[in-house]
Image 1 (spheres, one colour):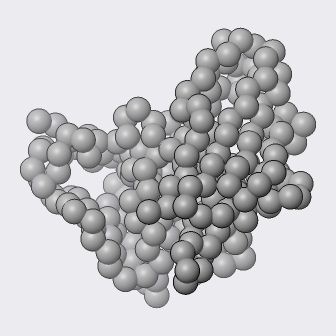
Image 2 (tube, chains in turn green, blue; image 1 turned 90 degrees about the vertical axis):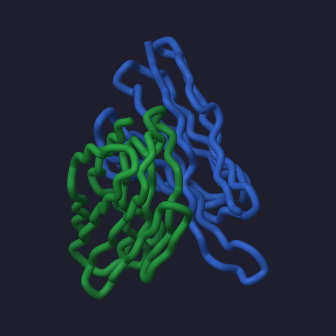
Image 3 (cartoon, chains in turn purple, blue; image 1 turned 120 degrees about the vertical axis):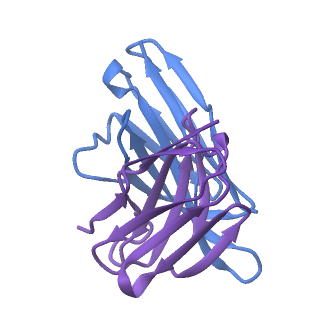
Length: 110
Length: 119
């Protein structure tokens, strides 16, 4: 099956800093999503981004499907950005069955 | 925008009881719903796929008699954990896929999750 690798596994940021999270995948995909799981466990949809670039406030994402990677940018980080960020991909032969990466644990300190 | 909701958001139950978790799609009709499970400090793993009006299909290693899934309408799917035991304690997340808006854009959204603790 498809492999989804996220890096770094852990990230500690000071409030106000910028960061980039990466998601590599081993094969072509139909779709890719980014999620934020907050410290209370709630999963929040961030981006539905099979290709191209999208922005939502301080967050933006870019997927380069031909090179099999996606990046999530967090600018001017805030303590509320803490949590685990997951990347999930939908393989072409697995309609709707997203494969999740292991996640990046982000801690933003005041 | 389209939202997927889950109810309850968390539940504590005694060992041996059954627990029902609801997953609803708002603003769109979900032809297919997916159920995922997340153990502590781990990623999400797919448990089963359900299509409206038909039986669910389960991933390898998931007990279908333990995790009953009903997808009776285009906006509601339920997961029932039967005779729950402490090892069933986990975070359960649903995902709904369907066609959104007049343009019929196919989309898939994930719910916020339900935390189950079995004592």
